[in-house]
Image (cartoon, rainbow, N blue to C red; front, side):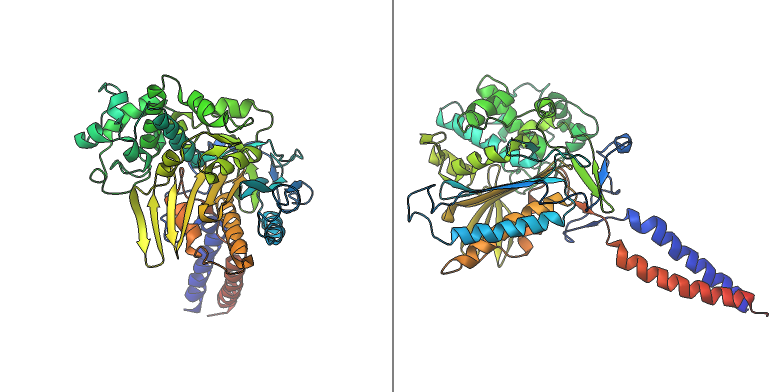
Length: 499
């Protein structure tokens, strides 16, 4: 009898051992528990497994924030603007913020990152951290370009705004005006196919499934024309204009429509309408331009506490939704332009009316007593506690970016990281902390974003996936091993005791 009990105990112990060694390390969890995990493996399907051969790795000891970082402070009270223009507390804000950025990066395992803050039409903070590629010592600098994923969407909407100013397009132009041939563009919902206009496509209210068509880019490597053709085989998720569902292909259709309206290519349109007038001299549009630039940041994933380099993804097939690559220096110009109502270096690049239209809510995403979230045209708009925030997150699955604007305070921040497992949370956390510090140093603090903001923004501004985080193994492993030792000891004692 006791021998049988001992056998059962040993079997149970073996199961626990299997859980520890096999199951738990391959069961990633989400940061946002309210968001379902669409990916089954820690290294998601779009990362070819052969990319994990002969890769460079590093642990946290290698990534020293102080060894590979630089900071540029622009003191608004000491020569960068008229005396008295800025509250004196901005120095304190930036000092506290810089300490927070360095501490968070040091503990993040992220190989490299960059941060820029604009306040009252001045770049008051520029920060570069870490290295371009894990295992190497080449540091991130002000001109290093990062893939910014869906932060590209605001650029596409803004380029269309410039065409609206020129009378070349209207926001109510339909996709069929520019893709009239059924051999190019048809949807199963005939109403959506005929009536979907730039507002619909840029605000994710076409009725198509959330992220439908992404697999055509990431897994099958089709070009845009092939992907657009194949959208006819995907059934609609909801009635046209009734529901928000994030779709990169429909968004890209708006970008490609603008290129046809302007009789050019979409990459050329972005360069002419955005990059050139904003002096974004280092930023690029396409994948080939990114990899050909010797000053580009590598792309990475973190798994089980180790950062791995993985070759960057080619997102040109849905370029208007996520293919841009920008430097932190250039993103400072982008923030100045956005916060100054379309003016840069004294030039009205895009009219304030057309730029405001890109931030005008088009469809409700989510609402609760404390917060209302809408999607505009390439931007998310959040109303909370009397404040309006304009934001967007970006991810390529291997790099992360986040843009956050508080127009009422003329304050904005962009954070970029060359990793996406933890990089997404890092970017949002850094930007949110700036708002928190800024609020607390005011004479009359204003309400800041609720903690739920971080998960909400990643939930509703995804590029291609939600971030995966490996389970915290240390505590679980310790507890299971203790139980295992007790059970094995008890089982062995029963096995060796005479019946």
